[in-house]
Length: 307
Image 1 (cartoon, rainbow, N blue to C red):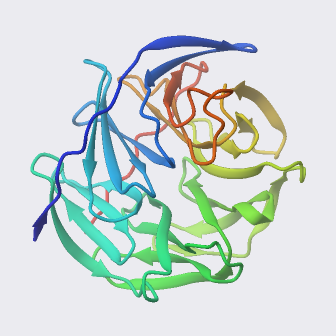
Image 2 (cartoon, helix red, strand yellow):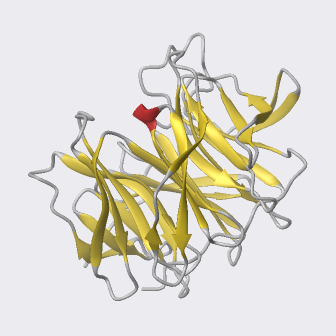
């Protein structure tokens, strides 16, 4: 085991940003290089999220407004909850258990990182507690990415190869449909899902986005089964209905919108992560911040890793 240190908290600022029809609150001016992977912890009443390339796991406490980043010692693509109150973190070289109080890390499932050229990207647990993790080349080489499943007994199986940037994923409320994004596809695909076996069927295109310089990134699913998709390069989060139609659009004052999830005591707060990587800080001073709004719908509590 090794201990991960607490990083400098930087500046935390609360302010309201009015953009289009949506009212957003900047809850943490974290200036993250690549903010990603938000997950609501209903037991602690906090939001966990990561700064991938900086190797930081953030803990945002809405009751105090404090955002505390902790150094994981490695680029971290995603975190997921465990039943014992700890987290699992998808690192470059595997899945590690992370004690959020002490910062202690313990490797649970090692991966082949190809000499550090492959890292974990987005990840999420299915309703049965299996952890799904995307793997991506550091230079985002097409074909080098994959989608893995980590079971409760820590066995790893590969369910997609030949990917470029495996990204957002989610499940329908009944657990029988899995949604998945490779950002280079410019689309969201829906797969029949067997909740007992944890297997994907033949996918179909749910929605195709225009090739306008933006790409779909992270996602979450609300209690009605609608998808909320972050648009990297598109300055927005969009709601996708079950028939693939685009509904509500929440505009943000930053270009690189990375992911989103529902949280809060009633799961009615939509938290949105963004990236400051390569941003023009004069034109986009809030890039890399964590935002929150209330779109009028509720999300679903996240599943916890069963391992």
